Amino acid sequence: MDPLVVRPVRYPHLGRALLDDDAARELRDRVLAARADLVATAAWFVLMKRARRARRITTGHPQDLYFQRAYELAHRHGHPGPDAADVAGKEVDDVHDADRVTGADLRAYLTLPAVAQEVRREIEAAWAEADAHGHPDAARVAALLDACATGGQAELAALVAAGDGSAAGAALRAPGHARDEGLTAHDVVAPPEVGTTASKSALPPPFDRSVLERLFGAVAGLEITGTAGLRRVVDEEARRSARPWQLADEASRAVMTAGSVAARLDGATDAARRLAGRWRREAFVRQALRLPDGSVPADGARTAFVRRLWVRLQGRELRGRDLPAADVWDLLDGVLRSVVLDRRDRVKAALAQDGAR
Image 1 (cartoon, rainbow, N blue to C red):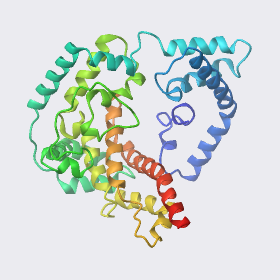
Image 2 (image 1 turned 180 degrees about the vertical axis):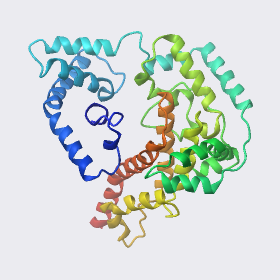
Image 3 (image 1 turned 30 degrees about the vertical axis):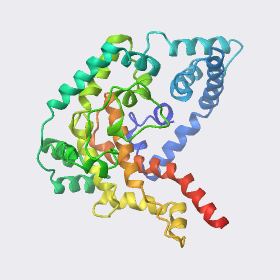
Image 4 (image 1 turned 90 degrees about the vertical axis):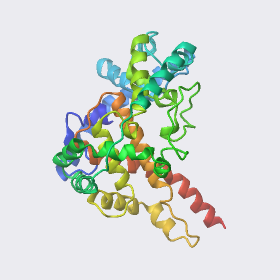
């Protein structure tokens, strides 16, 4: 819905976490106007999944791979006609073009002995060059968190110019610091392995992930073609792993630093108060807080927030997307929303179990 119907890049006022009345009406009108296209899209999507099964394709997630194509087919052809099965099959074949790199291609590439050895050398060289930094300025971080929900351009620029994100990220090399943030299970952060296996459902903390695990879920969406493109992405990830916060861009590091502070939900900044308010408004949170057994629904939420924020920032860098100040609040708010949704079922199950006792 966001990229195809709402199109927040073109209409940024519709991409906010909270909309005013005019923007809400405009959003409603856009969704209603797209109703016929979405119905046709759903029909094309079913045909593309059917073609996928017929070809015994198992790589990639169907929604990630086909939904935009289905939307384009709906625009070109309307509702599927008599020849729709053939058209959908050609689209599936195009998506899985042999020249386009997939997760399976990435695994095969990284498990070549010569490639794995070269990537290890890249990682070692990058980590040997890692510089120490000073200490972040807490006042500048707080200034961004006080301003980002309503603007924050000057505050983000000041944080980036001062290198506060790099300073905070470099401090994670000290024993225990990265573990306290939930980014590693170890006392000291170590260079990543190259990797031989990857599973989206059983990933370790971000800093403990191999190069394969860091790239496996995203590589199919990057539309890389050929070995040269694959080598470039792998080399960039090897270098990124040695940078502060294991992120390449200073703006990403600044937002990671600010997000880590805001995730304490301590009310010390405007962003922290807004995030804490969103958490408290959840019905399952209010119910859990009334339980007599001392259940705390926020336990572990900060760690989940920091990990998801890192994943989103790393994903933006992989796709070459800038991080303007106007996106900072929506990014932080969106990460917390995803954490809430992910934990809701878990907490509800605990509540049901408590009610059955």
